[in-house]
Image (cartoon, rainbow, N blue to C red; front, side):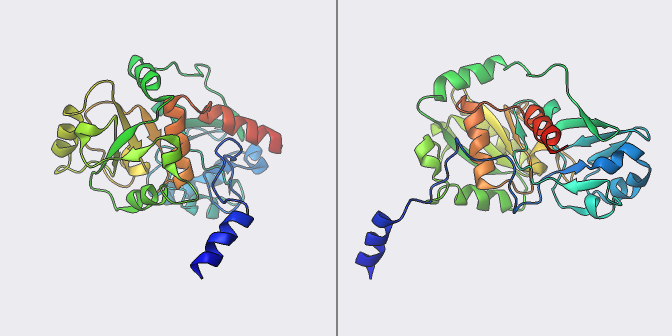
Length: 272
């Protein structure tokens, strides 16, 4: 039987994900909530959506202006269910950025207001990290900083034969002393702030801090704890899918050209 399985693997095409052709919209995923055409009538019925949002990711500024912090969004779909058709699940799953502000989006009369500062310039540390890792990839140490272990499950899945993170040169190591990046999940509870900082301090420069999951980006349902520094990469989602995590890693390495708000704006405009 083993021989037959091996023969099958030679005859059938491989199932490895092609990152270069992957889409930020996945039809089988809920993705982030976005306004529908009904939002042109005003946001008067969105108070219920804002009220049921577990992380308070929706802020109603006026009858025409609504702000979404997708760094807080769990992609749970509760807001769309209570929106009277003014919000929908977009299937947009690439909720990652090199700058925290890019995950905050304002909609005016249902249309997305683009941030004038885009693209946000890379920090000196991000540039150094790209120079180090663009060709060879990077090693990371993961710290579960009071999370629920869902991010860890997705990171484990990123090594399987479909996503295969090691083809990008991305591997997890046992010690932060051997790592180029520190990936953390969870809102950084009081008892994990010191271990996270210790892990960061023993790493050699240049190094990167990566917030993986909504709790790591914003605290999610909980208060955000103390961080060693501002993260170099934010990957939202509760939890983010393995392909989303790896595309975020590729963005940090400079192998993937992507701006969250630019991609979201393009998709929303094409659907109108």
